[in-house]
Length: 268
Image (tube, rainbow, N blue to C red; front, top):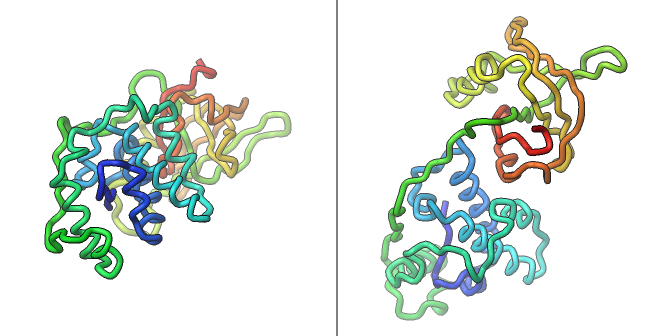
């Protein structure tokens, strides 16, 4: 996990990267944004993530600079809209930048590590730079960890939902296996199981994430039931909601089977 910043300028940093690292930076920026914003995503202790704490819009602009350079070199891209979703209103002229941006030691360490990774490419691009420097990852001004939303919220279900109900009374059944996929001990799965059983209350709003990332079925959760090796919850479906209806649509990038997000104003 890394965001390469050989220069203080995001566009200049993108332009100097080789093809493989430039392409990977788009993906790693997206992972870093998710780590900073989505609860239980992981990576929050990695120094390359911590250095961006409190500066999500700036990191989003960094990622978009990588995307623009990638596209300018003739490649297709699918990460741009997802990166932009974390700070859709970020203004490059007015965004808060981390205090270490412009620190010569930080940028020199990134130049050095690029040389270490691909000396045949970067020695000529960074002449005279020492080739044995460790990464310099500044500590954040304040540790900011993503938390589950408080107050009005809805549950999002990402796995398959089995259709149920009579004609004219559409419904779905949510199935949560008692054992984690693969049969291995998985603390994250145990937390998901606990939320499915105890976190959702009868009557809570549930949003079903399907094949269309822009449109979701919504419904009302029923009681939890035990059936052999799975927990079941019925959902009475009663409408639709669009991705744009959510105040923070980036939270819908959460990879968990079950998670919660702030309730969209359209559902209040």
